[in-house]
Length: 383
Image (cartoon, rainbow, N blue to C red; front, side, top):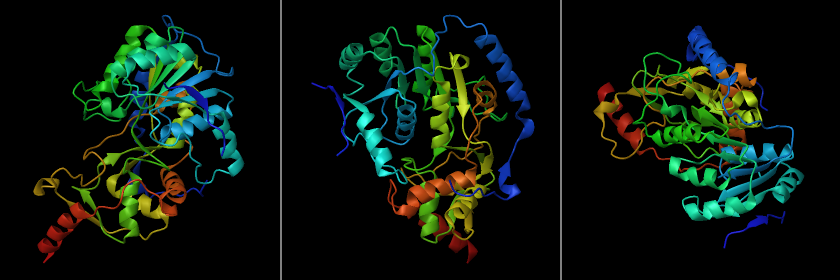
């Protein structure tokens, strides 16, 4: 039977992109005003909002926590003196020493972290184990469906706060950008489970907060975001980018996201609110390729544009981003929470490279098969 056990112990200089690669999009003022007015209506007259004192020590459960976001979040929570338990299936090591983390820092963290082994899809076990332990706050980092959250709420009727990791991918595609928290959402999105979870939390009357990151990057990233570019830069290969390359997107550093998760803990202004979380600037696909090169110390890359409709890549993904403009306003989080990203894009990419890929560690081996298809056709056309 699963049980709770204590595991015993056994910044780069700031750089900037070319102005043509970035956009401040000062037109976010309207979005800022709209979200602020909505916040004023909802926050200053909360119905059933529960109060949490962030300065007090809390018994905190993190659903997940051994990969990427949870790795950085759990450390911040432990440093603040909270009792932190990770709920995982136990298939991966519960802790790992981070690049740049001293032996003493890691030993201290490892000695304090707790583990509850189980499958979150085993709803009866979730109910019984969480009910027996009791937790003040739950961070759900890996929840995808509403039915995975309901047993947690059933098991913890006195829960003070439920903090959820959603996604900016829930927004309905629009010609009016950036996406604001009050924008229309897409019920057919591949993230519809996260939308359903937010609806469930709202319907249950619990004190909840949902963060909607855009693209997340940083050390230990298991999604091939910056890693996709680093592989090609290291191999000295051209970087194939779909269509014009001026599509605008947005990345947020995992450490900034972790700090946002900390900032909503016990924050009455975050009660029953959604916040977009990402980087301060927006960037074009071409600009991102150049930013990755600059951050990692590679020469400016050769960029090859292609029309995706001219290729059949099968099930393989030729490019790691959705081929469209996709970015969100973070003004609400900045003004309501007082949160602000610490990393600019190139600085954050340098942090990721120096603490991960640059040390020879990455999640996926390089696969240039789709690149070769694109480049091969490009050479034929040039000839």
